[in-house]
Length: 113
Image (cartoon, rainbow, N blue to C red; front, side, top):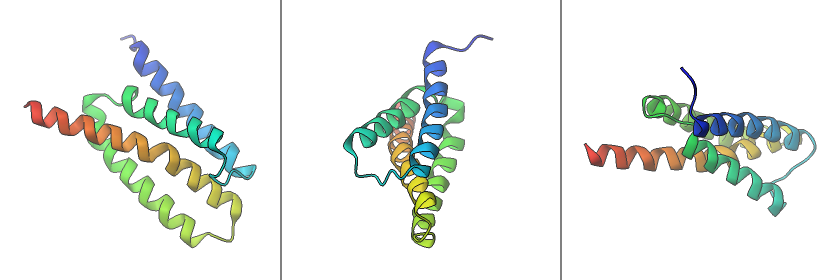
């Protein structure tokens, strides 16, 4: 079965977001540059809006919550390793908006039923 265009865009946004988070983290993105911050937030919004189908909502929310918690605690535990800390920060900037969007979509879906 062919994928919808939205799912394809969302899949690419997810992949680009992960690669960008790794690259920015390795090269010292600290979360203070508004350009990179905006790009990562937009990628997170695209992932949340387009990449998660209804049957994937629960697994995505669980995985997103775990990733957000692990990245948040990982930043605290590995504060002395700057590049890992930066990767965690970039992942948080992508996955917090994505998880919030999917959670809101899920709430509206539950309210419809």
